[in-house]
Length: 272
Image (spheres, rainbow, N blue to C red):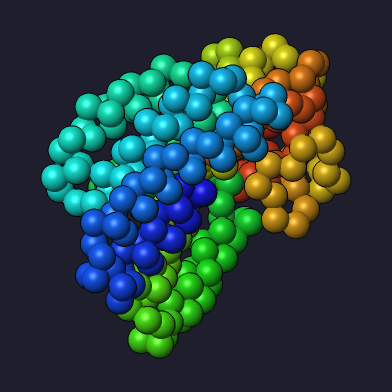
C-alpha cells in the first residue's frame, strides 16, 4: 500500500502542467525518487532499527525499479521484465515481511480481477455474520462519491493521482472481500487451516488446540472481529499468525467471528 502512495505522488508530478515543459528533467526526478528515496527510506526506517536484514534493501530496490516500469510505460516495462520476474521468484521463495507484503498486494489484485468464475470452496466462512459485504459496499459508495467530484475540481495532475488512488482502493476492498469468500477456514485430518481472507492466516496442528469454546468474551488476539466474537480457540503453545503486508504476530488464544461456529467446533472435535 505504501508503494501505491508513492506511485500516486509521482503520477501527480507526471500529470502536472509543468511536465511538458521539462519532460526529461521530471522523468529523471521521478526515477530518482522511486529508485533511490524508497530503498534509502527502507534502510533508515526499517533496517537500521533491526526489523529487517540489510540484504532486504536490495530487494526493495528491485521493487522500486519495477515500479518505475509501471510509471513510464511499455518501453521501460520491457526493460524491467527480468527484474519483475526476479522479484516474484524471490517473493515466493522468501518468508520475510517484505516478501509477504509483495505477495499480499499482488494476490489482492488477483482476487479482485480474476476470480469471478471460481466457486466458494467447502469450509467455514467469516464474513456473513460480521457484515463485511455491507461494510465494504458502504465504503465503496463513499470512495466513489468522494472520488468522482474530486476528478472534476482538482488540477489535471492531482486528478489523475486521485483517480489512481480511488480505483486502487476500490480494487483492494473488492479483492479482500473475494478472498474472504474463497479462502474459508478448513479442517484437515491433522491441521486447522485458519484463514480470514487475506487478513490473517495460520496453520494450527489440531493436537495443539487445547479447547474451542463458543463464547462472546474475547480472549487473546481478535482476528478480523467486528463487535463480539463467537468462538475462542485456546492453544497449548503460541503459534505464528501471518497478516497483511508482512505483519507477523504470535498468540496462544485467538478470538474468531465464524458464520457457523458450532459446525467448526464439531469439525475440530471430530479430528482431535
